[in-house]
Length: 103
Image (cartoon, rainbow, N blue to C red; front, side, top):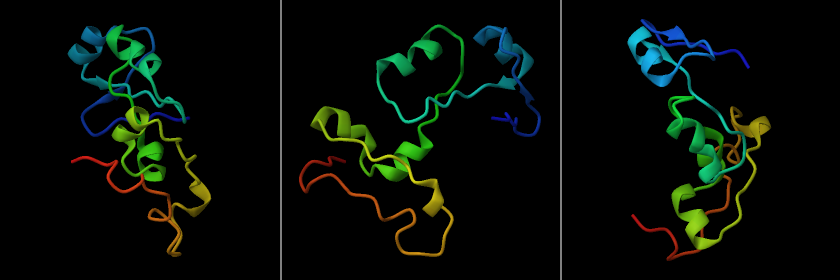
């Protein structure tokens, strides 16, 4: 995967600490894939990465923050339907049962 930094920032070398990255104005997001859980926070807490991205999981799992507590299964993101013109694109994933999503 190619890392791309926003304007005014640089892609982060792997060996820099979080403080060194901030001083160098670099961005180093981590993408854990399809897993979720405390193990994905460890690199942030250790200063090995900046934000952790769960973008695909948010698309395929409406109510993602509530799902682990509810014991709900996670739907795998299907990127083949992500940018299509069909109704099953971003809105065709199953929601949690009524009453399980709290705002």
